Image (cartoon, rainbow, N blue to C red; front, side, top):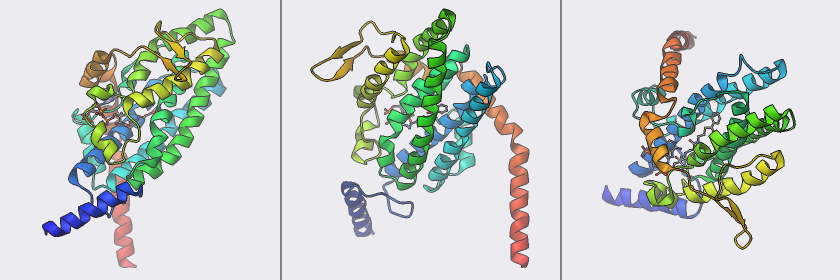
Length: 315
Ligand code: BYC
C-alpha cells in the first residue's frame, strides 16, 4: 500500500513539476485537497457576499441606464460563484456544507466586503479597485495546478475585466462632472484604497499558506508581488482620472520601474477577518436570511429532480 501511495505521490509531484493540471480523479495529498477546498470555497463565498455592497445601490442608482448596468453587474457575480462551487464539488466538498461553514464562521470570505458603500461613487470604486484587484489576483490563478479551478478562472477573469471598466467609467463620469461629483470620487478612493490593498492578504512574512501553495502551483505569485502589481497598474489610472491616491509615501522608482508605496495597516485586516469590520455582522446576517428565504427553492428543485428520476426509472 505504501508503495502505491509513493507511486501516486511521485506522479502528483511530476504533474506539478511538468506544469500539467491535477484533475478531479487524480490522486492528490490530503493537504492539497484541503487547501484547494479552502481557497475555492472562500472565493465562492466572496462572490456571493460581494453582491451585497453594490446590490444596496440598485434601487438608488442615479439613472435607468446606471440601474440596468448595476443590476446586471451584481447578478453576474453569481456565475463565478456557481463555477467555483462546482469546482469545490469536484474535490468531494458538499455545497450545503460549505454554506453551513460560512454561516457558522468556519469559512472566510474576502475582507473587502465588510466595508460600507456610502454613495454611488463607491459603486464605481468597487468596480475599478475591487474588481481590478480581483483581476490581478485571478489572472495567475488561470495557471493554477488544479484544473477545474484554473479553467473557471479563465471565464471569471473575462467578466472581471468588464466589471473593472464599468467601475472606471462611473468614476470617469464623476471626475469630469461638477466639483462636488469629483469630490465624491476622491472621497470614495480615500476610503477604499487601503482595504483594496488588504485584499491581497497579509504580507509574505506573515502569510501562513503561501510557501506550500506556491510549491504546489496553486499560487503563482506571493501576496506582496501581486499587491505591487496592483499599485503599478492602478496609480496611472488614478492619474488619468485626476484623483490622488491617499498615500504620502507613494513615489515612482525609475530604477525598478515600480511604485514605492506605504503598506496598509495589517492589524485592520486581521481585525476585519476576525469578524470586527464595520459590516461583518450585517453581511453575514443578510447571507443567512437569503439562505433561509431560499429554502423553498432548494426543496422544490429537489422534489422536481426526484420526480424526474422516478419518471426516467419508469420509462
Ligand atoms: N480576506 O496565508 P495567507 C470579487 C486569510 S470576489 C479574508 O496569505 P492564502 C468580487 C487566509 O484565507 C474575489 N481572509 O492565505 C465579488 C488565511 O486564513 P485561513 C475574491 C484573508 O490563501 C463581487 C489567512 O488569512 N478573491 O472579486 O495563501 C463583487 C492567511 O493568509 C484575506 C479571492 O477569493 C482577505 N483579504 O492567500 C466584486 C481570491 N487575505 O484560510 C468583486 C482567491 C488572507 O487559513 N484567494 N486571508 O483561515 C486567494 O487568492 C488567496 O486565498 C488569498 C490569501 C491571496 C486571498
